[in-house]
Length: 240
Image (cartoon, rainbow, N blue to C red; front, side):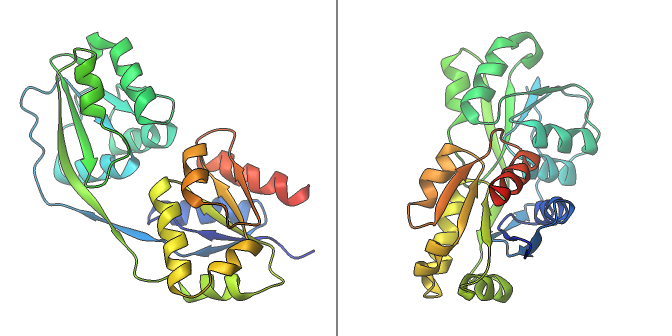
């Protein structure tokens, strides 16, 4: 039986980590990021900040690249972001349920840890408005943009070949609504929109599945919003 192929759409360094998970499950990963992360060289403005909020691991990396401060409490949107914060040297880390709404609720439930206010380290493109949600809860908050995700101009040649292979047992891993939309756009640009009907989409959430559209052979949603859960989903569905 041929091993499933999995197109990995995440930007680096997360793409390499998920490719490793795929190999551990016996899949053949095809790394084809649909965006690249560019970190700005800007010193974070920590004035008045009692805590930091990160809605992605990329936010943690952007902060760590620009500041050595590690003494503030951290509110992380999910487990992967929390792990990135731990790896960066933060110690006081609070973990939410995986989306902006749950992060805002979590911070509101721990107002004492937020101290004088929350600084949200963000990218140019954002899913949801954390600052507005926090302000509705009476928590002072502001945002500083430290990175941006630049869309790829085309899919990797190996990904194009996999989409063209009518015999391939092919999955596409999608971790965000923007990633899903970009992948579909790049497939269309390559004239391969019909090929999506032979591929299965592994989606991190319902919002990702919705953004991916309905052209796929099938769409599947991970039980939890983690890379490990997404890999486990592909493994389970491939054996079904």
